[in-house]
Amino acid sequence: MSQKFTNRMTPSKFASGGPVPSPCTSVCTIDQVTGCCAGCFRTLDEIAAWSVLDDVEKRAVWSALPGRRAAAALPVDPMTRSRTGTDAAR
Image 1 (cartoon, helix red, strand yellow):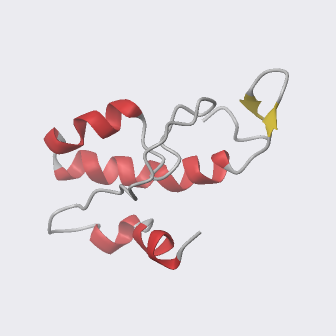
Image 2: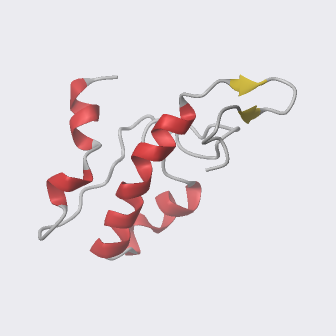
């Protein structure tokens, strides 16, 4: 993972004040298992609504991303096409 992307994945950088940037990394592919973008880890609903979310809602989305990113690193069970591991239900 690039250093630029890793640095952007820290919601504390914009926790108070100022506009909240989009987490988009221009890798716009929806993972069929997680239902999240493989680049920014947002759901389709979050991506579609981003321009109308207020800063509090945007920060909430940003706060969810590290957990999704970690869950996406779990292996996929080929029989169920779901993530395996203790946090797979996220």
